[in-house]
Amino acid sequence: MIMEITIVRTLLSILGITLVVGLNAVFVVWLERKVAGHMQYRLGPTEVGPAGLLQTVADGLKLVSKQIIFPRSADTPIFILAPIICLVPVFVALLPVPFSENIQAHELDVGLLLVIALGLLNTLGILLAGWGCDNKYALLGASRAVAQILAYKIPLLLCILPIILLSGTFSLREIVVAQDHSLWFALYQPVAFLIYLVAITMETNRSPFDFAEAESELVAGFHTEYSGMMFSLFFLAEYTYMFVAAAIASVLFLGGWLGPFFPGPVWMLLKIYFFLFLMMWFRWTFPRVRVDQMLSFGWKILLPISLLNFLLTAGVMAAL
Amino acid sequence: MTFERFALDIYALSFGTMLVQITIGAIMAVRSRNLVHCFLGLVMTLVGVAGIYYFLGSPLLAVMQIMIYVGAVCVAIAFGLSLTRKAGEEGLQPAGLRGFVPPFITLAMLGSVLLGLSEREWVGYPKKIDESPIGQMLLGEYLLPFEVISILLTVAVIGAISVALIRRRN
Image (cartoon, rainbow over all chains, first blue to last red; front, side):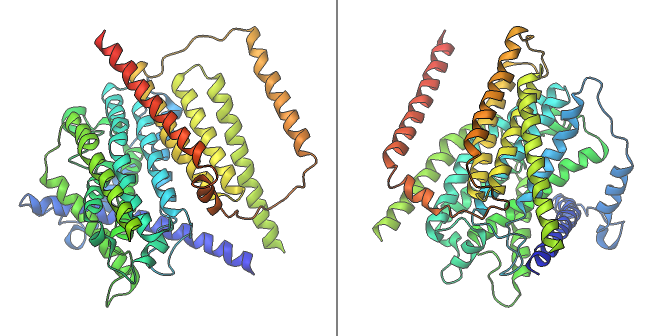
């Protein structure tokens, strides 16, 4: 009997994650275009469906029907593998994300570590994409992505450590439960919260830190040579990754599914889309900074501040 | 019991896939004449080993394997590659006679491991291990080695920076 439940549960989890990935991509692409539109005094998509909601579906159909072009000098196995390596980790990273007290695909006591580790695999996909298609702009974008990962990942980890000190666990579910009887961790750790916001903008390759793509200087960078469905796989990966990063942010700092009046999943989704809206706001407000500015910002400002914040937290907790 | 049988089959199948992935990756990493393919083979093997850790009941080790080996070591290698070599450049051909040494060593090691394991009990379906003692032991019993390793790493980083600085000055 337990076996049957396990198998049904597994199938349901796979179905649920696939639905979240697909629907989120459709919604976020629409939201991005609407937000961009309204920030530039335009309307954004209006024609297809109510308020243009079905625009992304139409775009998706177009992308599916487009031809996939393989450059002659590309390294074909790597060229094909790269978008898959980008997408699979973010798919798996949704496993430990809790949407309410009992909606979670798989409870792992190292859930937070898993999400961080899979985030590193995503960069590997970008790197292989840049290498595989034998294009100098793509290669430049890929090597920028690798330089960037070193600049944001260490401050990111140092911002997460105080939360782990406060909650005493790596399990995402337990971290939310730990915020049930106290204030949300964003109020205890405002510095870590702000640095985390900057770091996830860097991590998901969003403007003002979108050096791997940088369409005005690198002709779209690592995915220059990709077309049709393979191109959209990168975007599926990027938008899912944004979703995961926002979900982790709301679990770590804003108390996950906790909140008055509404049931848990509603709060969780509200918080996630709040973070996604913030990231879109950044994108359409700030101009792209230079690569060396970003690197020195990551190494010389974010890293010392987050290290100090961590040491201070550890000191205060030891003193109490 | 059919469901249990089914689950065990799936378990064995996934485990076998991991083993195949590790082997193919390792062969690719050694045999390929294209540096990027070697790198991809290395990544495949390391991810496969993480999978084995997970199937043997230790998610912590699996996640750490991905984080440290794939995330840190491989990205560092990739960084070095993208700075030093053109993508897809062909390497040197290996010497003919030396090609016989690796299979010999591999067979010898495999034989000794199998011989060592033949006395042990075989388990079909390992249980999850309690991993919390790892942290306590690292900060308790093995605190000195832990600290020595971190000092060693700091020395290595400082050494790398100074070597790079000397090169740049010349």
